[in-house]
Length: 263
Ligand code: ARG
Image 1 (cartoon, rainbow, N blue to C red):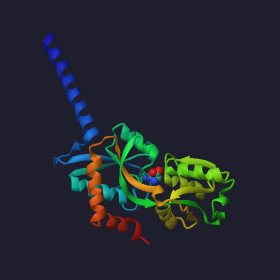
Image 2: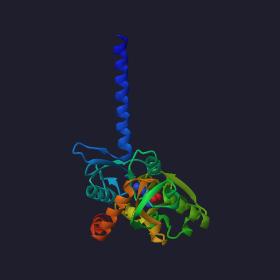
Image 3: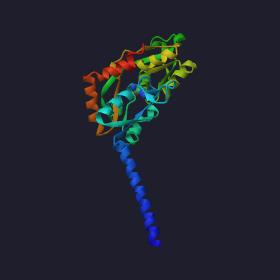
Image 4: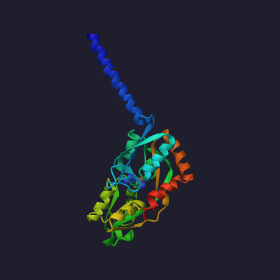
């Protein structure tokens, strides 16, 4: 009897152990799906059209430039891509903690971030834009004097706002999601927000009461790259396919599809 219970407990322990191994395997280097294709989890912040978002009119799928690009690279390398949506400010931690295999979120490879994660080459560049209501009279940085300016938490736009605050006296506020910034401006709680131009332009279409002007900085300042955990086995292979796509025109086709064709 005692022996039977012992055996029973042993097998439970074994099953538990096996299950644990299985899940770390999935987290660190991708799991397998039914067709024996490896699954890689992509972390993103799907509040960023046309990079990544949900078009509720069309369904609940994550769509956008980054999603297409990730799928194209995955297809070439034999990976199926699974998208995991979270707040932008949590993405680096999710990479470090192994919850995701890579991040594509219009993320800019800054020196600070490079201390924690590795990046591919840049695949797209944007510029910072000051967004405000049309009737706000905000047309230059100087006009922001005494104003409340919103930024996405954890984004490089936070740093940009800090820079602006050295020039004029502003109050900086942050929110987790881009639509919240838009809402706060419309509600009059923020006078302006710092948002990337290509993203802001999308919001102008549905919000004709908003406008903006771009800050003419170094264009690489708001470049996008793919982020990986330090020493990831995927950085080099993704980068190789990315650069092939730059050369064979596939990347340009995606840029055309998501950034140019919707005028
Ligand atoms: N490029 C900026 C950064 O890296 C903003 C990116 C925000 N991305 C997003 N999916 N909300 O900080």
